[in-house]
Length: 443
Image (cartoon, rainbow, N blue to C red):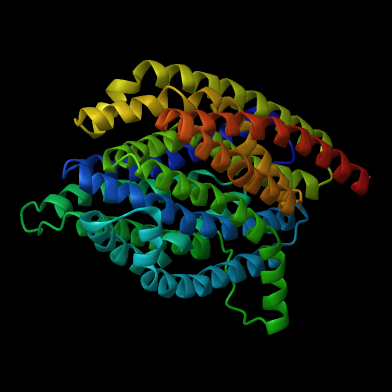
């Protein structure tokens, strides 16, 4: 990553990463597609699970980002022993935290989803799904951390193949376990969760084999507690703010879901589907962000600030163009896209409303996502976290409450778009200020 044409290198690395992320978004869309066939209540229940699932997966992603940041710099410095130590200790950290989160999750299902607005049959359906999902949390977290470590080496093809494996298995198992085909029992919501756990288990196995056998990034040399804690300290310095930055988004989504829940289950179902479509729309920008972080990290480690600056500029221009194109496409095809997931006219109308308002600000939200990723690898995780918190709790949530009061659901969606735009502008200015500071310190 420290030599060769910058634009071509970013494109070459982003393409397989984009395929992998699109595949994982398709993973979630597949669940929504088949669960939607069970009925509106089931689709609403799945929508309630989405913010909580996102919080936990984003927390895992934070550990992965923290690990990848320190690993990429160690690679740029040519210290492979440090790469092995940091990779191994990052995986140990992720498994340790999963044990705590799983227990806490089981004990808090009623409280958490009750606060989100799930009641009666919907809460029962949520519990059916989440009790199984929590059991497979290890299989979700471990591959996310190991894939980030692999990407830090500049290999984006292998994580793509690992993610594609999960998608294929989930697509096969979802209809079999949800509806009961052949020898498979009809498990409905439990079947959707079980298909997810089995698919994630496959990525757990494959990612471990790759990172240990092929990449040789794991060491079984027993570290002293001081060495282990030093690795955790370095990883968590990036991971905690990075995780917080990403967690505030689903936390905000949970609050938005609660606001929208006042308009009924069909509005919640529409929001859940629209959120999944949004994640699909950002897949390529998310892929670029995943590639840009180690690119910046390796060039910083090698002292190539000229390449660091140019890579950021190229990426920002791409995010602007991609966001504008996504808005045009979604606004035009909103209704046929919505009807893929449900035939309920009220749910379809809700999805269309979202897709014709919020994507208008995707071009600046893309900038925001790139900026927070780069700030983490520049060792400015608190800046990234502050931006994430500000976007959600200073802009999105207050504006959404006001929008709902005066304009209903449309006001909520307009508030999200306004928050996306403003936070993109602010984050862009902050990033370049920090780049100049880092360059001055290193110079």
